[in-house]
Image (cartoon, rainbow, N blue to C red; front, side):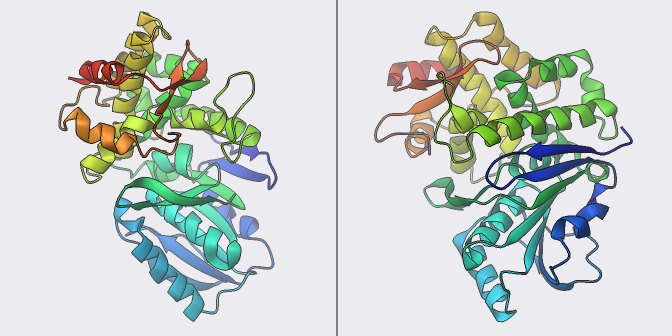
Length: 355
């Protein structure tokens, strides 16, 4: 794919997501003519050309460890010491964790300043950088503190995927496959047709998967930015959390040593079985989860923690309502819905699918 693709994310504050090779060169255009000072928040070893700007360069801690209240408080102090104003901007360069914490800082500094995301991982491109969700972790769980803050734009430069470690590329495919099950079955067909090309960071197939996944998220976000719910029984923006209830619990109990996409893979296999046992999903579609995910190297079996430990974390999931657990499930391929208050017996039985 030679030409860049622009995907418009509609809503109260519309913005563009640019997907293509070399698109990070378009950063000055997204920042605008009035910005002179930029806080560059980046993962270790990553950067972007900001010549011509007064740059506050901040290297964030590695991975999920960046998403803490202590890191955010330190960033606030740095912005204050630099005299950062409403006409200045934040640029994030890194994976999903960098986008989450950088977006949260931009959302909370002076009640919101401009932010542009340059995601450098597949996971960041198809998930964290698009949609305006920001967040940090607490001792109780993942992303429990956050804010909605739409970026001024997102630059998904596919050249950055060429140097991405294969394990990180595979992890990002967890969110890609999720988009296939909840909204765009053509994603699943592309993966099943040629899993080798899917794992080639320079392939047109992967480029198409990135575009399709971003379009899925853009469509969902445009209709339900703040997770107030969709119409006609559709879960609205909650649908993007398909597989995430168990996934976040897996991440928490393992001290975030399991990659996010790997945890989402396990979570999708779990919730597919949950829906099947509840009589909501047919056997074939439930089984397809494991086959598609395994074909690209994602885990579909796991038994590293007692279910009671995972259940305790799931009870503080953002989708829960009081003591009632709620899961995004499928009533069929690309037919998402909500399963509310399944019995503990059903929850435990579904977990056996991972053993």
